[in-house]
Length: 361
Image 1 (cartoon, helix red, strand yellow):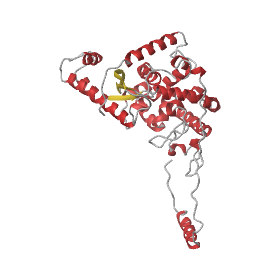
Image 2 (cartoon, one colour):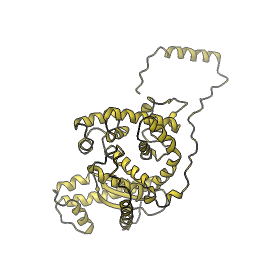
Image 3 (cartoon, helix red, strand yellow):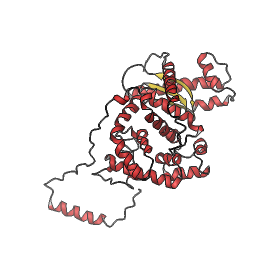
Image 4 (tube, helix red, strand yellow):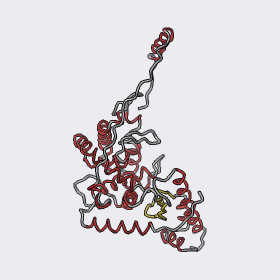
């Protein structure tokens, strides 16, 4: 893109923010000492929780963080992309490629046995102190670039105020901890019109196949776009996951990966969530799945202390989402359709009604 690369002071800014928050939280109830909620914080994922708290609160939409996807405490750089506003797809792709190439080159040079040539290489080498040279090569293939979400998370908190009272009532009625509603922040930022590349729709991001078990979804109507109905469906799915898997770390992970997939993975490790996340290598069990529960805990922490992470947010106005249509117009048939054509259509319907259609729901 021909952008001029330059050093930036984002690391110092993040450190200052983290220090301020740490001091504030020291005076608040400990996020780890919450015996009233059934959401454990395994020590093995504490670095991941901290990473997501920073992504949600300290890194802006123009900050790109390059880390080791399996050891996110290895944060190689926080790169601030010059400019203003939401980055374009081209800018995002450029930042992703630039950071991965830059640190793959550094790691591969260190893997070859060369002495660090500058301060940056010495800083990277210090992260691998005591590890064999092969660790550098493995790390070069394990780079991930994460875009900051501070602005999106902030707006999600303001939107959540509109939805939370009803959603929490629905979850309580289902016998669920109302704090589980925070999962909608991870899924969509409480954005009712969200649509993923995988076809997931709505605040709770149900795919069509999963959603059909709990809601009415047709060509002309979609309950996934009605927040109350989708929340009832999410409560039923989470309740089912918990009843099947026996604890919330597994049940919440299953919301992302699927109940059967988590049951198989957890079964290998005796139902131990931490062991499963650290060691399971099954299909599509990647960064997003392994971090899903940590994201939830991070989002819950930020929500609980939102005025400390976003000073002044308590005085900001709630975002009232615009209504979203869940009904779609049926196509209008031509009034000039001939009687013969109508008869053919009727015969065709009779013919197809004899077929047995296997639906994968």
